[in-house]
Structure formats: C-alpha cells, structure tokens
Image (cartoon, rainbow, N blue to C red):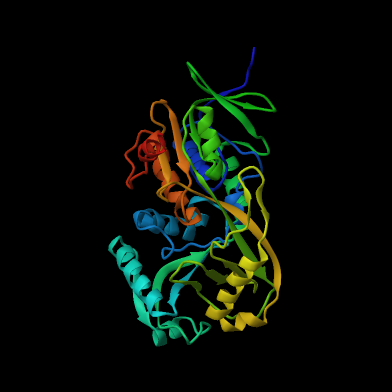
Length: 372
C-alpha cells in the first residue's frame, strides 16, 4: 500500500509562472508540489534576456505587467531572495517615419491601458540615454522598465519554495497524467505523484501536457536567439529597444551587454533551442550597434537560443480547463518574464477560492478556434 502523500495541488512546470503559483498556493494553505523535468527556471525562464518591459508587452497584459514589475522590484520582500533586479528607464527608438508612426500608435494604446509611456524628442531621448545614436527621430520613454538576472531566478525560487514547505521535484519528467475519482496521478520514472488539483504550467510544453487530458490546445514554439558581449566599460544605462520590437538591449552592472529581440534560431519543443542562425544573428547585432554605436567595439562572448510559447492570439492561457474539474492551465505568456508572476498570482487566488483582482485569460476562446 502506497504511503506517498496526496497533495492539495500539483504544479507541473517549474518556470517563473509555475514557481510563483506554487509559492502563493502553499502560502495560502494548500499542500503543494511542483514538478519539472529539469532544474527550476532553467528552460524558457532561465535563458531569456530578463527584460522587465512594458513597451514590448501586449496591451491586454499591461495591468499584469505593471503589478509584476512591482513584484520583481520588491523580490526580496515577497520572494525573500535576490534576482539581480535593476529598475531603470526604458526607451523604444524610431529611426524612420514609419517607425515613428508605429511608436506613437502603440505607445498611445499602452498608455491608455495604464502604462506610463510618453513620446519624447530626439534631444530628450539623448538626455535620458546619452549612449543611443543621434540619428533617431523620437523615442517612447517609460520610467517603469528594467531587468533581472534570469540565471538567478531558479536559485531564488528554489530557496523560497523549500522555505515555504512546497515539495520541489526537479529533474523528474512527467510522462503522463491520469484523472481519478480523487483527483490526478502524475506518472514519473520515480513513481506516481497524486494531487487533488493540478495546474499545467509548462510554457511551450503545455500543448502535449493538455493532450494527457484529451484537450487539443495549439501552442506555437518560438526559438529566440540571444547574445552577450564581453565585459566592457559603461555604454548605456537604460533598457533600449526599437519600434519594430526586433531589439532589446541592456548592460548589466558587471559590464556585459545582453542583445535580444526575437531573431529566430533553430530548434523545437522536443530538443529545445539547438542551433543559432549566423545570418540572422548578424542582423540582430548590426541593429544593436546602430542603436548603441559604442557597441561596435565590443566582442561577443557567447550566444544561445531559448524557447518562447505563443497561443493563437498571443495572449496567455490562464484559467480552468473546460470540462475537467480541478484542472487549470497557466502559461504561454508573451513577454512572460515580465507579466508571469502577476498572472500566476491571480490564478493562485482563484484556486484558493478568492476573487482575483486582475482578470485571467480562460482558454475557451482558443479551444473553439482549434476545433476543426
């Protein structure tokens, strides 16, 4: 007879979203377990650029992004551990008339949703960030911006979860999930784990996870390329992007500059990000040097590819799984590092029987669209 405990809640997927949800659920009184096939926050949550930005966030996510930015900025208070957060200004640059029109339109919509984004002149942008090119026409300026050290995220969450009493099961792939009359059983190589309720929080892997329950939820897999320079003298002090969204730049306190922006590499859900595409990488780096001219003298230290999940409408999958009581999904959030903690906290409130103060994103809309 098995003596393994039955948890009130099982969270499958240990990225930023799953870890945040497990933490708040445990603190809310639910005996919680979190399971991941690798170490916590070492998939998408550990290999992104760590950017905390509103200017790259979907309009519908602005309220969550605002709250999550405040959560990241106060990580020591609610998480209890440092994740290297730096709060600073952010600029989105326009070099052409087309980019300027795009910038004004998007900034207006995000501002209407509550983001403190203003349009500033070239001279004002240069005052905010002297390192940018003087060839810009204008810029979007947001005082709620910044970045974290994505590499530290897993270490911080692991410590916080263990301190809270969550059962942390790392390096333990889940092979399947079965419904029973008492809840759910996750099959792993080390044996079954039983829950009364379950949350699927696996990012790009949510699609095969949902298949365990007989639900088809298409999730697109993006393979983002990122690079980091050697340590160089300070050449910028803000987070810099461009109106098209194909660039994100920030310089960490120790001198390295991380270059991102969604230029696509090769990989897939099964293998992860497996290969960089040099011709695309060159375009990304040229754009970075165009925005911050002094970067042209820096050497690249390394590059990598990380996966990002996207639903059909690029909005999150967050809420109950229709037709399956006590099963929930949470993830596939564009710019999820920025907004993920807030969305996960709202879903934890729902599971705890509380009314969330910010709306979720139920997947009914996506399941209807996926029906042949």
